[in-house]
Image 1 (cartoon, rainbow, N blue to C red):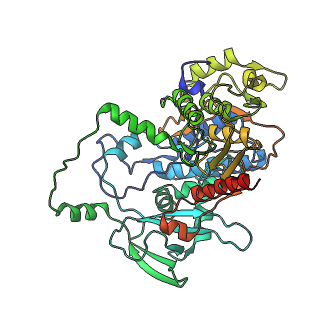
Image 2: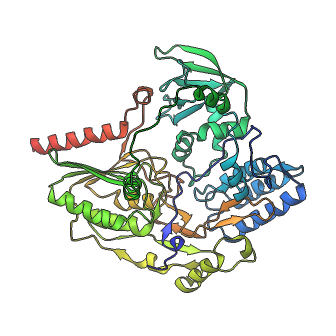
Image 3: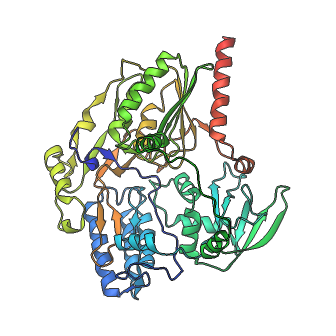
Length: 521
């Protein structure tokens, strides 16, 4: 619509946005030109930090949106004071991640250098924290926060299996652990749902726990068994090298499974992102949408899907956005038009604070981003560069294959960016019910749209730098929350133990209740 460059057509996904690599403690065979133990002198770190701070202060449109300037200055100054000794790249990233999280912007996150990524691709994995967790906040004053095992790398451990509730690790309570880890996770506003979900995404709890508290040979775990009794157990760190040796003694069994063709592989990849399943007997359907990104042919998928819903007389549609971190606003707007009953806008305001940059050499695609701002925005009296098209334009509902039945949108902490725009546009519509948890993306708005990587000159560490501020609806309270569900659906420990899809189960109950209500009337 504006340019064929992906960054100019989309709000990049934020779902999780915060990636901390597993701490590598082995003596892996990395590339000869890179050493994971390399330390950067304080002078080098200070140079990088000055570039980092200047880029944020010059370009970030939401730097003081949820954190007052004097508070943000305090944290930025704090970060600088930590750079008095030489540090490795992971140690420096840890400081940057802490400061970056204070911005309260889910699209502003720190990433490893390209050299570190290449090294981690070839290095032997070191010892790792063995447990993956599902975490969620308490619902009400008497309902405590939960931390439950979802996977255990130590496969012979018969105690800490899926569904075991963990109370403390090495003497640290679950509340202390979560509070400590939260300080390094970026999110929109004051949203805790996204932080809980980030820690629940497979592997991230262990990698962040190790990054903050360090690796240990043994972990003392306090847990609650199925009878509600509190117990303790000591478990070893997971050692991939030892595990690989053990598995290597097994007899080799050649596979006879036929490999899918390239065309089949492409279809499998697409179906992992978008899929429509229909139950024609019960006139219900479920649409899985894990992304609004480009490359999945969503325009055709939406057309065929809503045509099929109409043809088969589907009256109840579930749209699953729980893994949807965003993508193209064009795609999120298109599906909204198939459901919306009235015209809607994308944003009340959308603007950048700066066009050019004295730090241009550190910003990815700066020339193209500057060109976009030059030709497609207008500087207004407030001094900002407004993208007026989305501020003015109202999108009309689709007439062909428009869906007028009951719609249930499943949301959670990974529902971010463009998926938040979709949920926000439909949240108040009478035939739409949002089920699950608040979205990870902010209901009031976000800093996004164009999100180039900025690369620091000495270490090569990168961080995402949003250039536009988007206010979805100026009448929405600016309280730092996501789009709220009409029907809250949180898991229980038993749900995790059984691997039950509790949000879908709750939605099916709602569909049943609605159909029974129609029969009575």
